[in-house]
Length: 254
Ligand code: ADP
Ligand code: MG
Image (cartoon, rainbow, N blue to C red; front, side, top):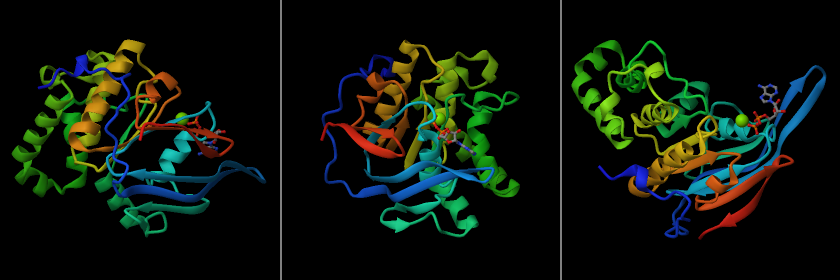
């Protein structure tokens, strides 16, 4: 296994993929929330094209709508106006069941507070999405294959020595590695990470960013990472800021 800890996350990624096809995009995306009789606008026309294999960082002040944008792009929520496109096809207006299937197949999610199930071991937490997705019978028939897949991804994130541990026996960095493994076990195309280092000390945050970069470079995973740490955000291919409901480009290594 490569030494993930020694990867240098602050080095800017030089080999970008400017000609890769657009993977995930939004057109004139708006989202407002209802508060009593008022509509509070959060997203006011977000335009973004994220290429296959790109690592995009989104920064912005607390409350600027970063989580909202990630949820709308990842089909966890619907836009008020505008479109979300996957490989050029509109996906936000599909029937609920199709959206759910597409979300489970295409997107992996990582959150600031891990959201691991405390009663389950690391291995069981990583297997949980596969258990939920398959019928009891089909899971049972394929349990060895699934277990191997879970162990393989746990090796990739450097947790082979923690398979039988419960979340409360892990450090913050280990919990986030377990959550990343869980997000990846069903082989998503796009990882949406909402403040994945927000609850970690600076050193551990760099390790997690190194792991995400490794997955982006080695597996070609498209990654959208929300963070309010601009120094971490700058190691992505492209850095945008969400401000007043729109995205502005801060840096582009392409
Ligand atoms: P960020 O992730 O950048 O901190 P959020 O996307 O969480 O911002 O929130 C943006 C704004 O939308 C905030 O003012 C927040 O209070 C509001 N908001 C978020 N989710 C909801 C919701 N489900 N209902 C009402 N208002 C919400
Ligand atoms: Mg947020």
